[in-house]
Amino acid sequence: MSASDHADLFTAIDALRRPLAELLRAHRPDCLVSDSIFPWTADAALALGIPRLVFHGPGAFPLCVHRSLELHNPHAGVSSDSEPFAVEGLPDRIQMTRSEISPIFFYPDFLRSITEAEEKSFGIVVNTFYELEPAYAELYRKPPGPRAWFVGPVSLSDKDEADRGGRAHPAHSRWLSWLDSRAENSVVYVCFGSLCEFSGEQLREIALGLAASGYPFFWVVKEKGDVAGEDWLPEGLEERGVVVRGWAPQVVVLNHAAVGGFVTHCGWNSTLEGVAAGVPMVTWPLSYEQFVNEKFLTEVVEMGVRVRRGGSGGSGVVRGEEVAAALAAVMGGGEEAERRRRRAREYAAASRAAVEEGGSSYQDIGRLVAELAAARAARRGETGQ
Image 1 (cartoon, rainbow, N blue to C red):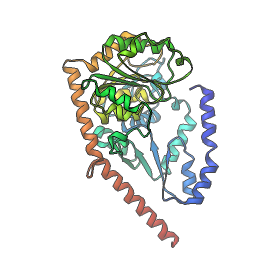
Image 2 (image 1 turned 30 degrees about the vertical axis):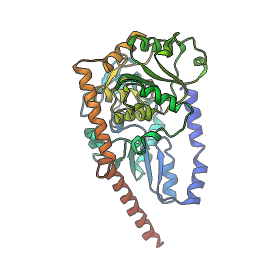
Image 3 (image 1 turned 90 degrees about the vertical axis):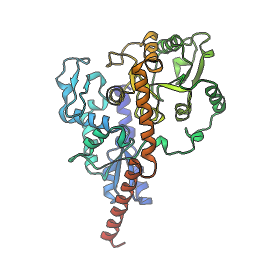
Image 4 (image 1 turned 120 degrees about the vertical axis):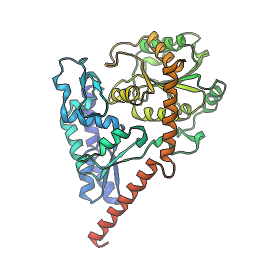
């Protein structure tokens, strides 16, 4: 996203102020949950005496990393985008480069407005579960940190596995039939989210890497401009797998027994969906907090392998041999690969337990609802309603 695109985004975000204020006045909800990038919703909620909850896209680990970067500004002292620096105050030794920092850190005024809005809010809801990142959950909530409730993985909120994904698709049955025909843990699922933009050259290198790996694959390719043609797709490749142009039900695919690896851009939703499915990942971050999420997968929970072992950046074309090597590390044999798969299975089991009755996320949701109910009762007592 270019600087002009960011400016347009901020303008569009600000344009929502008046219609939201009118909506709140008309309906007087008991609570407002808003994304962190809408900081002005804190004042809108305060003006009407409504508690505001902040929703953060990332989990506790990236939130702790971002808070450290905001407080200590370690990247200001490095001489180049590729020079590593340590992130201070974390339970693990984490290094980053300036090229791996989310673009929001280059908009300090906007970042400050988000922080100030959080301080005015009732608390934070986070799509994660305690057992996945306990040290960072504790660190994030440690005073003077905010009140926070860990309520995920939200991808497990739908108990009907056949319906997960939220949308019917004409090819749904065909895709599932193809997956049903494959051996357990044999298929590579490849998807880079809805915002990624790859050149035809990069798409061809991904295709060559998939071909060289020898594994059957389920590859979701965003339909856009230079992808409209098929010059990037080697002849005969689709005989080895499925190429979906547009959208596919990611949660359904990830939870199929045939899927044994996930090539991902490391957006937090995809990261947590992969964790909940118990699938080891090939990490390929592109922007925003995705480089931080990659470090979580590869260095903290250790269920991911970098597609580019150098780690930082995102510049330059990743070659097919790099893709094939990362796939072999995730899908192949050996002690490290088996350890990664074992950890993935353990985290998947923990994620399911977290959302069941008595689990950590189940209890956090209960505590949140109780606190909101108490706040409502207090407000009504103050106003005599």
